[in-house]
Length: 296
Figure: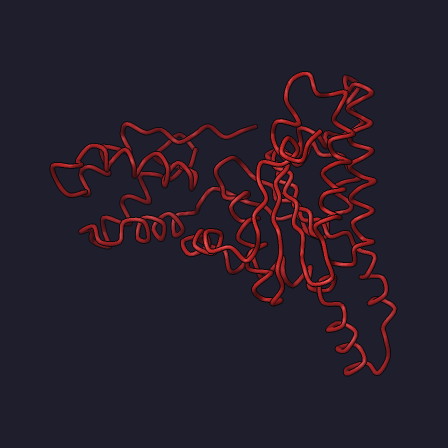
């Protein structure tokens, strides 16, 4: 199997496009610090050792234990909540903070296509072999496995085929082997269904980060950012946030992608090229654009 069939693309880091994606990513700074503070123990172990010697005058046994953690981050949440873009921007920011080069690769959805079950274990093995190849002393390698529940489903399921179990076993083995790279590689698993992931994989995660649909204040901030230059009053921004919240939509909140990629473009399509974007056009777009259903 050629590399091009395993990965969607490989992006050299730092990357200007990834950095730009993070500019309007609401709540990103808090998420980044949570990931970075967890992983810097692996990415920069000398800092932790120096801290231990300075404040405790010895290398704490806990520091040694931290070295055996898995460089695995699980991103859990509904579709459209920003998991994939967050993985990209976090990886880019890490290389900038640590002043290192990097590369970001994403396991192609093609490897989970119909008829490839028998090849899944080999494809997972190929992906991690490439990750190991890309990781260097001064280069970080990031692997994103999107929709990970499709290849990391719990092995306790009776209906699971033997070849699917083999793929999960291979994935667990390869996640274990990433520790040998001593912080030079990071694996992101993105899932809409954390409960479906194999328990052994979840236990290995250094961090499980929950992504949710935007709260009221976050929806207001999104409209304010995306519509900078449109004549809207603070009261109208509050109303737009309310109209896209759960109370107005049978308990379902508009996702980030619903707002950015469906609702606002729909409003622009109504008025362009004849007139400016208005509050009325945005309200009309809300009435004609329903929030995406929540994946159970």
